[in-house]
Length: 251
Image 1: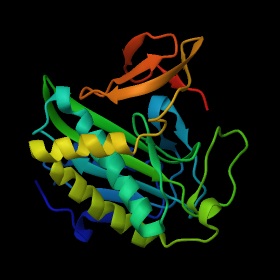
Image 2 (image 1 turned 30 degrees about the horizontal axis):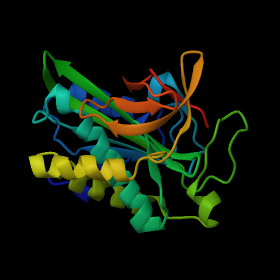
Image 3 (image 1 turned 90 degrees about the horizontal axis):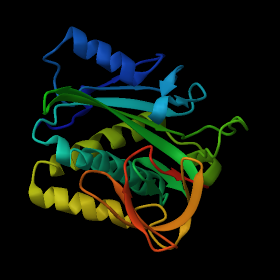
């Protein structure tokens, strides 16, 4: 495992997508060093989960992607990487800005009922082995207004009333990602990550509204399984584990 340093972080003035450019670099350099990272404050075609578009005003927000080689993780336990990255992002927002954010399963970052950051992890598999992963993060920092067509965005500026230095925040995020990633190499670290993830889970208490397909229901979260499935109990008493995209939060 490589230590994350400032020398690994490369800033790009403008690009379409940090994840896409990092993948192009990896394809040209198959031996690309772990912890190689790209960041930009002007991403023109960012991507989110489920093929969603990540919309960001130029010069206001952070787009960041890092290359990892998590071959020490089996596909069955790979969700711990998503958990670690989510917690690193939470720690950055908490320690650098003072925001108390939560993780909306599987890896969106929320303050109250609004989304302040998102994570997109793209993996390259060969059989049951993970050749490499590109973890992309988008954080709304200094943007003052958002399109009314976006469902529920919020920025640090809107919450705190002031702007923050994007370079300093990106460096802080990079270092904390390195610290969190290091914990995935030990069983003790993975146990610590899973426990912290549950503590910071959005809607971890009480019954809330969800939807499966066209069927709405109320349920409470029981746990997030090592596989990444979300186990819930409905107010009717049934218990079920949902994979990503099988359940939708109603907010």
